[in-house]
Image 1 (tube, one colour):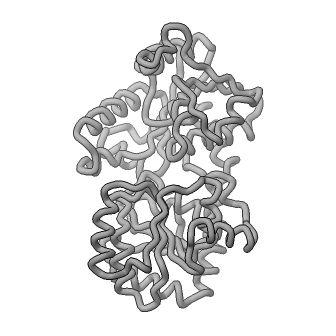
Image 2 (image 1 turned 60 degrees about the vertical axis):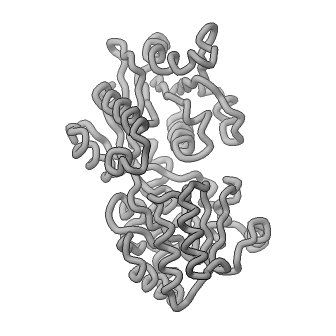
Image 3 (image 1 turned 90 degrees about the horizontal axis):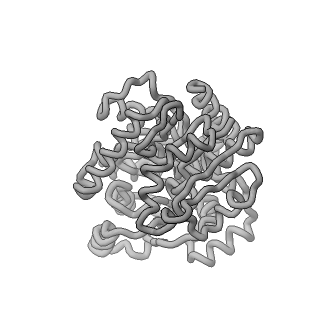
Length: 375
């Protein structure tokens, strides 16, 4: 089968949608090597983790050429010409990996689009009105054009039905997996080097994700003030204006010595930070899936996350869940976990079995089943 991908995010995004794109294409290539994979991208950044896609024999990378290689025409190439290019290449299925499909769709070209979340529709206050309008227009057009829609969680499927009135029979849930580096166990010496590199405490609670309002890190700080068994909190993620609100709370409650921000982390170091942590806390208000939960479990770190949304899909029945507005509940759960080593070990042992559903061979098979439905 010839499978074409909109690979813009794969080659240009170092995290988020880029990680998803690289995971999908790598999983398919590893487990279905007889397919041909066409990677269409308007540009290529110099990223560490894209080298294999440029060198492997079963990938064909295609960039705009001639007039369309001009920077101001690359978006036109991707949006308006890519459908015809894919059709001319004899593509059996074209997969838009991030909410988008080419505007033009020649007769006979079969398309699939992945939808990650509809947060911009559920919580428009977190976005500019211009972004909400652009994202909504692109997504509406893509789901209308697609032959099949992939949602990365049951929560996203439910939102597609609720907000866009998509026929649920047109939507397949195919989960997102995490990079294999999170499954590697590191030695005490390796982890201690990371402790020194990032000045990590000997014991700590961990939160990973862009430091923004939706991720709800303030709840962790509020719980910290109320905990009997305080441990330092390490917050890893890109900085936004939300940090000001967190710093105001930290100053007001004199907990500066208990809170450590790391705004830039090398991706290769992240698994060792997870493995160094005692508990991973993810009190986000809403997500499409919640891949950091799977990363934490893969690293052997017990998880406390929010009730509702997609969090139980990612964390399974043996992680713990709290009301994302109740700091007293979070404080109580953390105190219990810190005191109960047996419970922490049991959570991890059982959760490791649960996350086998996110293994690359499972996800690759699920994707191929979607493609076969329209071929």
